[in-house]
Image 1 (spheres, rainbow, N blue to C red):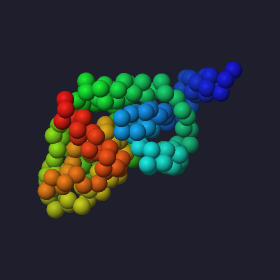
Image 2: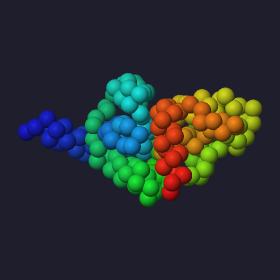
Image 3: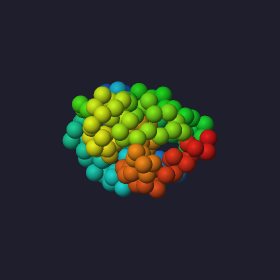
Image 4: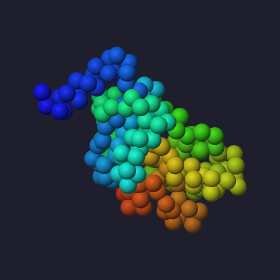
Amino acid sequence: MTLDALTARLAVEAEDAGLLDVAFTTVDTPVGPLLLAATTEGLVRVAYANEDHDAVLQTLADRISPRVLRAPARLDAALRQLDEYFAGRRTAFDLPLDLRLSAGFRRDVLTHLREVAYGTTASYAALAAAAGSPRAVRAVGTACATNPLPVVVPCHRVVRSDGALGNYVGGVVAKRALLDLEAAA
């Protein structure tokens, strides 16, 4: 039996026994490899390679559960929807999300990020106002920078009030690529 086959069998048995708390996989995308992780509640983390996938997995083990295993089957819907998004056939994600890695105002911002429509942008100031704290522009920036679900929760659609891109967890090149993808649709 190969290591891949053994790992797949372990993932199935762990899932069947209720011992798999965080399933993960990686996927190559036009903006680089992404790590996807899901709990039984939903997608909990999307991470760019520049975030260090090993460090992200350690954080998931520390904050959620040490029972973390490469088990792509739990992420089939997320993988399919990401493929559709990057192919220009999907404008919104319809996935259960586990937002436990965000709390308070940051979590409120994530909720409002999902309201920024595909192919459009919003300013940090507009998002702060939508979240009920118009003076919390920097806090919105922090919420976007710490978004545990980039791409799926579209923090890439938030730009500075002057139209400049601003920073992005996946890097400015990835942010530009996502905005260009959406503008071309």
